[in-house]
Length: 273
Image (tube, rainbow, N blue to C red; front, top):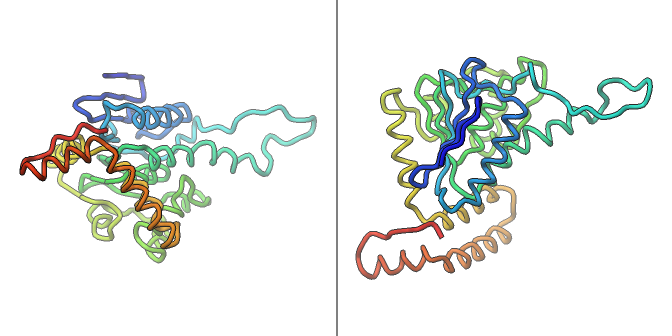
């Protein structure tokens, strides 16, 4: 299956859904319409049994340089005479309905999501990558917490994601200074999984996507949920969630296949349900 718009590409081949940002002339900055379509696509991938893994990538030399400020907008509402164009609450509501919804759509996607970062990931573009389950970047890519350069605070879950990924002190360093972070340094501090050379980049992405596309999809979905909530719940809750996740996984056909493959000493053939 293939769908295509001017600024977003979507294909599903052999269990791999590929979502590709396609605004290279705008450094793949995100528009509101593009953001909303991305949210729809991640929900679609969750429900589609043909999809076993999602790869999020971009065309051109940048991954995503943030929100396109030329077209970003706050939803118009009727206002009484004399009211200002913007009041307290407008921006926060816009963030909740926009950037935060996008990040949640990636984190809540029921399939593993790989970020294939081909170049600069800045602002919400960096947080889109960080929301993914696995991050592979070309070694010339850069990650930039650009918000301080604009005199604003991070949005799109940055202050939530970064401390959980690299610790509070390092998160503060990146957010307070807004310096460029190279992909090799991002790998060194545990922010991304791999920084690879340009000639290896596509191969590594395809290899990881291929392995996940034949994995037990429901088990991965349940494990993703456990891991994403692990730092937000107490031990008792975490253990309870773990027990129920195992209960659910044990009711899948892939579990039965995994057991039979073990007994018969052969490689399992998982179907994703």
